[in-house]
Every structure is written in structure tokens, then in C-alpha cells.
Image (cartoon, rainbow, N blue to C red; front, side, top):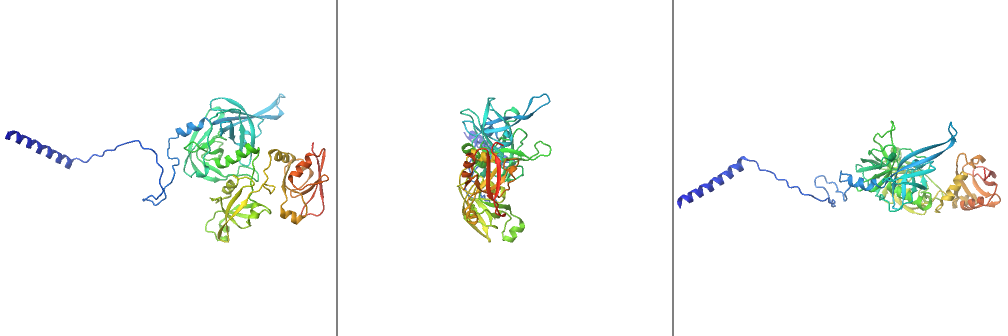
Length: 477
């Protein structure tokens, strides 16, 4: 019995000794347990290491873009326009041209948004879906000032891309550019947001709004009008332009922000034209010299150079020398940023405008008006009719009426090559009569001319020149 006890004790001591020796001479082994974990939202608070506020939402967290790409590609289409030529070729045949681009289906009943330059001048618009179905599209409306256009195809239950909030984009955030060029089906490229509120001076007209999202996602010819989406597959821009010397992509692409796109295409759908709300101020970017003169700490904001009499800004008390720093709680550091914010609203909407005056921040409620200095929404046929005539008009303000003592409409601008230009009329002319009938506003002007046949005589005056002036033109010329 003693022999067994001795053997057992000997074995136990040997085992303990072996364990002790192992722990002394062998380093401890680290065990890593890998388990799938779901994404979580950051909580309010501060990072204890950097004292930087943590974000309260996830943004472009995944770098696997497959889900986003799959959700968008089916709603990005190819658009081909046919332009009928005005002349004839060497063989006596009528000449034709064509252009191609992309578009994005934004509703299940067939509304498609694209760039104005993609369909400009086209007499026929063909849309090819991602599944190869082809449709002839109806042009709903265009807005050259933002380079956007809306067309519609006769189809139902279409895949479409939902709008996201372009204001929530951050520089450095991942985005995808999706196009459908040359019937190659969909092309998807990835990049990051390089900047916001960019103006690259490519659009024309006094009403132009250039507040582009700049990205480094590759956009090549044929991708114009395609979708810029975030990693959730939400539309946050319409790809519009690139800056290039070679004619190919060189790292700079630009998109119209989705919040502006949404407003423009809704106006085009509902009215056929964009209802442009005006603050009634002439503006310029801030400079270091101006900021120093005004005692401002930062060189940012929009300097008011002049206020239009009778405008919403005038009624709200804004004046020359004020510096606009915010619209509806959104900071406006540059002119493009302010134009984008104002461009989202219609005449009749009221905006909260923050501005600096005498070193103090103040605010005012500004009622937006249209070019005619009232809050009336203009119908597409009226706008087209005046444009065909070659004239842009404005109703007289109460201040104008008090100063002048007469009713009438003011000529803001005259289109080149139009009937009105051939009369030698100059901008600033105030029309008081059409024929023998006195007019008080634009509506009466249009109604009176529509009732006139043959030759039209316009009577009026210039504020800076004495006497009455008369201009005549033929309606059928």
C-alpha cells in the first residue's frame, strides 16, 4: 500500500513541477475570438483621447459598395436625343445630329431627371432602361440656370432612386457615380466628396446657380445626367460636369446637389418652368479688405451691394453694406452657397435671413418675390410667350408708382434677334399703353397683346429722358 502512495505522490509532484517549469520558460499565448458584430451608432459624448465630439450617425462607414450599387444601377438610364438639322448635306438630304447621356428614374411612374445639356436642341428623346427596354420620352421642362431637365416615359412600377439629403454630406465621405453611357448598361465608379458649394463658371444667365458637389469619382462623357449616391444608395446629386484639359476625366467632377434638384424638378413637373424666388439684393463675396472695414472676425458671408426697391429684402429692412451669413439656420459663407439655399424656395415663401450690421448679428423675415416683384407664380405658357416676344418684364413697385405717378410695366431685358430688339427699344423702358389701352401690370400687357391683331404699338417713357416714346412691331413677323 505504501508503495502505491509513494508512486502517486511522485506523479503528482512531477506534474506540478512540469507546470511550473512550463510557465516560467514559455510565454503566455494570446487567444483572439472573432464574432460577427453589427454596426452601431455613435452616442453623444466625447472621445476621451481627443476630446472631439463623436458623430451621432453613420456615414459611408462601409467600403463595400455592392449593396448601394445594386440598388441604384437599375434606375439609371441611357438618354439619346435626335436633333433635326436645319440645312441639307451635299446629296440634298436633311442633316441630323444626336447626343447621348444618362438619366435617373426618380418615380415609379416614369419621371426621369437629367442634364439640360443632354437633351438641349433635341427633337426626339429616346430612353433605354437598364433592362434594355426602350421608350420615347416626353420633355416636361428644362432649367438651364441649373443645367437640369425633366422628361417622362410611359411606364409604371419602375425601379427608382430615392432622394437623400445633400446637406448632410461631408467632405471626405464616400460616394458613387453611376451612369449609363452609350448603351453600355451601368457604369459605377467610387470616390470621395472633395468639396461643396463649388462654382466653376460653366452656366450662363443672371439666374444661374452653381453650388456643385465636387468629387473625385470618375465621370466620363456619356455619364452626364447620371446619379451621385451615398453608400446607402440615396441620390445626393446629378453628375453634370468635369474640369479637363484632355477631354477625359482628370480627377475633378461636379454634381448638382439633390436638395436643389428636388425643388427644380418638382417645379418643372407642376408648372413646366422653375418658380424662382428672389431676395431682391445684389451681392458679392466678402474680401479681406471689406471684412476689416466692417470689423468682422472672419472673411466669410455675402456682401450686399444694392437692394432692389420694393423687394422682399427692402421690405424686411436689409440695406447696402449688410453681410448675409445664414439662410434658415444654414451658414452661407459664399455666394454659391447662398444661391443654392434661396434657389430651393418659390415666390411667396418666407426665409429667415441672418446678417451682420455694425458688428452685430441680426435677423429678418424676408418674403421672396419673383422677377416682376410680386409673389404670383408664373405659368409656363406666359413665360414662353414673353420669351417668344423677346422681352422680360417687371411690375412697378409701390415706390415706383409713387415716384412716377403712372401705371405700367418695366422692361428688364430684351432678347437678341427678337421682335422687340428690332424696334430698338432699350431696357428700362416703362410701357404704359398697348395701342390705345392703358396697362397696369404684366397680366394686362399679355392679355391686351393677345387680343391685338396685326401691328402692335407700345407707348411709354424712360425715367431719365423727357417725352413719350413709341415702338411698333408686327405679331406675325
